[in-house]
Length: 437
Length: 155
Image (tube, rainbow over the protein chains, first blue to last red):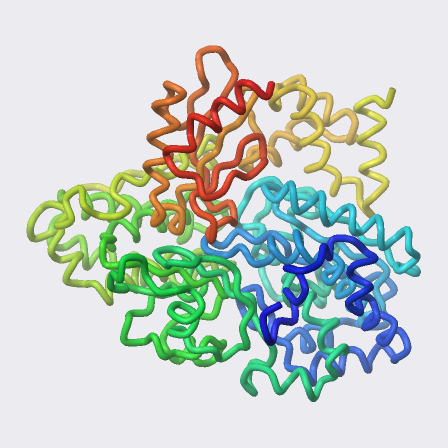
């Protein structure tokens, strides 16, 4: 086991999917400890540990818990295991290799907010992890660990938007996964309109570690504004891609070079997407940015889902922006006009720029579309579609301009992602409107 | 033998509201009928106690539900950014060559539907290919004919 691992500790040397193995490394002791405490004291421990959501927004879990109406007899815990952010694959590893840690966290969270019902919403594509998790749930139930709590593992059916918490709740209620207007937020009106604590897999899986180490020891890991560890999913043009659990605040350079072995064949880094495809790109001069919520935000991007994608100098940024834009167009649920129509405009404009048919005003039009989409939809998907496009355009303006000036892609067929295809939307939620001109 | 109807009743009992059983019921119906045909949607609606229109409205939202006939097997190649950077397009091209169909199409014998998909969550082991929902990772063009052989031979 690598030093300092909490979530992925012992997964290399033991089969922690087995209940006896998990117990042999101290598993379910934190649950027993929590049940000796009062429920508000468990919430207080989570709050004092400054456990911030590992799913994307970084909202403190304890503050969510404090918003829940404790007197309401009907309350739910929902685990967001719909990991679908391009670049992220940490929750899959946690569920596939350490499922009981997640279950223990679920039971502790249920105890803390005095809920009797837990739903784990796992993305439909994770069939193998679903099987592992479902078996672990049955083993834990059979061992009598659940008490008066029930845990249901619920499979999604393929929709990125269901990783957005209110869309997830809609989907869990058996509907199309379209986001809800907020407020009210889920701690007030969540699943079946009842108070709901909804958190990402890794957030919930960190809860047992807080009581295992004690708040004081836990907060010594990481940085004061973001204590603890995160499992970073490292991918793209890097020698050793994979999941690496590191203290928050670890420099980006250290993750890519010391842990990930740098870029293959000694090529140069062109950009680093630090939090999954939806966040603004960073450039090599920002490699010393510490990987924590506040530092990455100060650098102009977001911690997101701790999914670090490395892009080397062989990649055409217009092609990369276009591929990202096609993803968000495919995944826009269609509810809000700026996102539904805006994602189509982005794809059409980027297609023109890439194939050399764009005119000078198209770059300004692209910027204009981005600014008209930002902050204008019910959920963040409309913003997520903009961040890659607007940040690549801002940081690699010359490359976009060159496409327009030369009337062709300057990379020719030499870009590392030339010709990359995107899924065709077989469901045609809504027709595409062509941009005039 | 448990009928489809009975299985859906068991699913409904798991949730505080029957409606939450919609996705699992649609999945069962798809497994039984091969795809969500009008008959499958009707049977699903009947078991849930709702209308076929409601079932169809939900099914059309999700990529894993098929409203048109598909092959007996699915081969899905991720082409999102991390896989793209690892050369996913070469893997797509190799499957197209090996299967003789373009992404989105089904082989003439009706055996294999081939398509590209969005991120499957295997970015550290790119390129990722899902064959009947089981992941193959670190896929390169050289491995494609072996994977296709496994699909055809494995039944």
